[in-house]
Length: 190
View 1 (cartoon, one colour):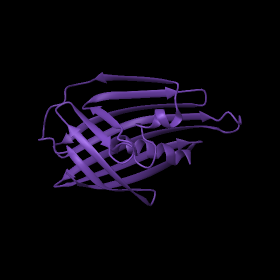
View 2 (cartoon, rainbow, N blue to C red):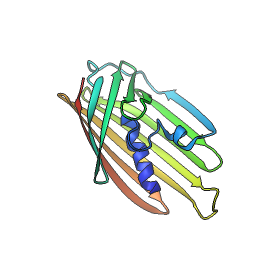
View 3 (cartoon, rainbow, N blue to C red):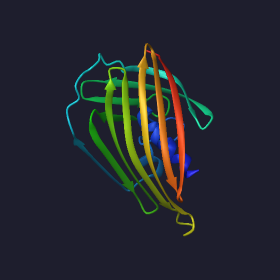
């Protein structure tokens, strides 16, 4: 269950929240007491396209054999990409190109930390890469605790009026490795 939750969090990091938890909702989902954000600029993003990713996109994502509907709005400029969830509360996540972004949250029972970097591969393709850790201990039992770590790569490609997002997540939990793949196919809706 937690491995699946981490997979869903990471997959959603590019396409924002949907029917499951994503970095947009991690803080509110777990009602964290502390949040620390930081970023480090590595180099300026050069404009290579006419902002092909900007617009409203709707379609489905296949995650572990289950399809779910998503609808997002992307605003792209020379330096960043902002993704807004249009189905689940309208939360927005912004990624600067070629910037390492890290976010950590914690409270008395949960800890998570995510680091990611968005880069343009070419004028039609973006790649989001990152790592994450998630630890928990429920107050009802010392036995109900765990730790997950993961590495992910998510590639988004625009081809005509279609946006394809492929995500591969490798998770380590209890000394077991698991690979989870998700594919989203979205059509330009506006």
